[in-house]
Length: 327
Length: 308
Image 1 (cartoon, rainbow over the protein chains, first blue to last red):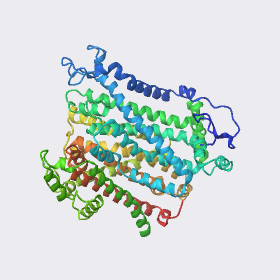
Image 2: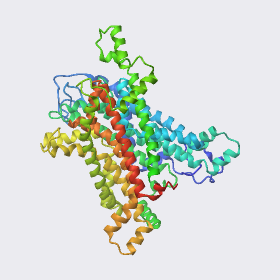
Image 3: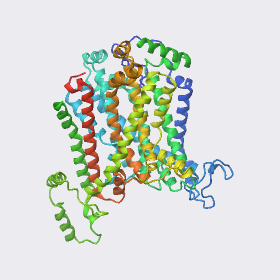
Image 4: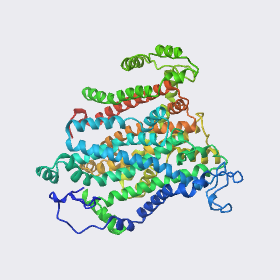
């Protein structure tokens, strides 16, 4: 990561502090995204799931809970019973497709706040610890070690035993369990940045620790942290669905994909689709997020971005040549 | 070496202490245990008597010391469900989990070393792309869903394997396969990464130039140097295996410690849950020490405490 990263979102770049002269402006992120077909698909997929999460309950909330005992365990992939039952129905005659859409809301309602909370707390804490070094750093790292050495599911199990499971407690548990991830990344990056020239310059001009972290360290560390957050979104989503599956996460009548798999498990022999589709939804969402994260890592790294702007075959050839040269 | 181990034991004991503290104070947070153990119609006298008998009328600090001394004497209280000592319930379940986790890690490490080395040997080859695909898939598939799909295909449809239980070799296949996906996927990537750099290092060129055959170069010279990062990650993964064990044991009815924990949560069997969490924490602690010891054996710099 170089200083003066032109992709810091706010636009107030730290290049007044002795950065490189402004080069030709690199292509905008969005244009880059449109060029990469796979990443574009992944982004569209995530957008679709997010749209389901926001609008789904208003449009299909009624359909997802309406029972129809004449339409029990309908098999999927036929339109004989109308669009609502294109993915089949469950043992109470509820539409699986509508339930999937509504469950996306709960999944996002847990994953997004949990990721945001751990992201904000962990990054701020990590940058602070890495910038100041000394005892602040070692104490923070010890705390991160303690939390990380404890299996997250176990932590959740203990906490959810004490507090009754709900969206709020789930968010709390998952956020606490994931703070160390950002803490470690942000600390490592900012510990390295504090000895850079542009930070030194800012210090010489009398900038305080807090404002150096905000104006100079944060914009430079941000792309890395955002990539970590995207990957972590998958982890949080998978943990939430595992907990819901085990019966200590989201509780009925609320819906989540993990819970739907658990309900479908009872009828695996007669109606496989009830358990299969929610799982597929989880897989597709996580695959999209992972793809987008690895694209974002390339796109936000000035040293790697060229890989996205040259045609595929040439990129590979250049990469191979670079590898040969490295040997 | 001994100095090194002592230092690691002290720093590793910190999380363990945190767990003991955490379990204790979370236990106090569940509210008055009398509500749980006594009938609703219990009189205030009965409650007071119950509190006195269990030491709940003491200050929290005294209670904590009592709790510690009980742990030291390996007294974990009694199970609410079965009235057998909690320690006994936990120790009965523990070997089943250990066998499952041990077999999984053994397979995962062996397979990851072989596949990862092959992938690193020729970057961008078929083996490399296959390994990449496998590991990215393993990070996206929820393990409980993978297990259920396994049951659907191999137990319900094809009828090759049992859906649950521990009888016979067949019963091991699906649980191990489910536990395997995550550690294998991560390990392959780690082995591949460190093998790529080890295979292009000067010492490999020396080994080749003195005429060592390729197998020896890969599996002796390069792998020995590439093993350290893989080992660290394997330790983290073994800790994470606890997560998987809870899920897998619940699905396949495996009588291990993960299933015990979930069951005791759902039935509010407090003593057993506490004992199970503690035993898991102690195991993780021991495992971390063991891994650090292996790490030190592999790398003299770590052993001597030299900053790298």
